[in-house]
Length: 357
Image (cartoon, rainbow, N blue to C red; front, side, top):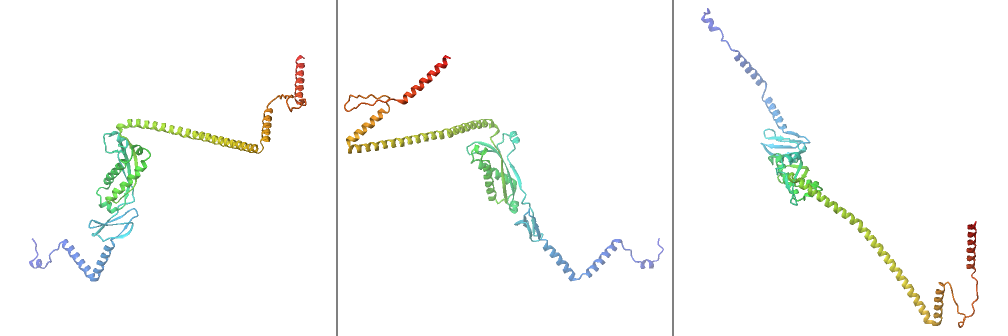
């Protein structure tokens, strides 16, 4: 038991706990801080906080991005690269989707998977001449308008896939099978790209199609052998047609050349014959005019010309000296003929003498 007196117990102060001491210290410190800050200091702090809150609405959009501004979760505008401003949080927020990245979407199946699932008709299409083909393509696309891309369509890749299949089927449906498998492949890809872009723009998707590559256009696996036989037959037909065209191109020019040569010869003969006939006719008319003016002289001249022409061709001439008005003929010696005969006899003698030796 305590031996202290009641007076001593009444005079001693009560004991305080550690928590009470700490709380008292905090209260004293807060009171001192509040006293140190007057009304002007509180206003300055509030102004600084307000300025910082206002400047928090400044944002920067990178070159490969677009800024999508949302006001209370609703899309209100799309901004391009650079510095911009929006109402501070919690009024506005900004999204920064990439718009320069080119994405790839494959339609159809590869050759291996196509062979494994030949019963599927998903990628079979009807051509313009009512044949069936299987076509695969790759679509390359990027974001053109980030706001529409995020809020106008729910599933962008699924929307692109459905629209691309529809566009490819429509273009294949206007093209014959031979053209689709050979020389019109690039044209089909270009037309598909244009039609796909129109479909996406009509839906305000905010997507830009950069390229469509046509990967495969083949007949179904079930009829590939028969189709190859038809292709070989058409190749033989084309080869025979080319050979016929080559023969046609070879024989016709030669025939035309020969015909032209014959026509030219005929024209030359015609000109020659006409000119000769005209000359003879003019000569006859000249003789006739002379005959009309002097019949006896012209007749005798014509007679002499005719006799001269006949005698030039004869080797012997017989003259009847008993005829009236015919005088005697002066004999002559054909010296030239005699010289030729003498030379021939001498040559013969020399040849026979050498033979005897």
